[in-house]
Image (cartoon, rainbow, N blue to C red):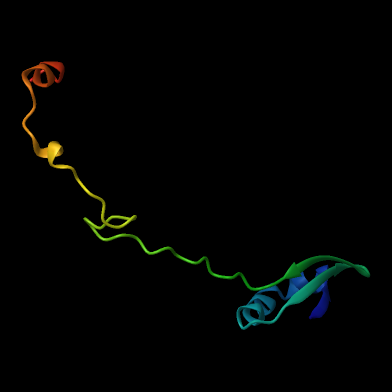
Length: 80
């Protein structure tokens, strides 16, 4: 890892960024004291999105009672 001064970093930032994109790393120092690192950013790992109609947790059972007609009391409760 190469050490550069803050003045060098400000003056040649574009060049250093191009080199960082290729994998090089820099330590930026104020005087003789290291204060920061210029390193490539690791791309975020993207999670696969489910397709339309696909469930996240796999298959789950739907009881037959879910398809049973509603009773008069349930219809009244729902305002139907």
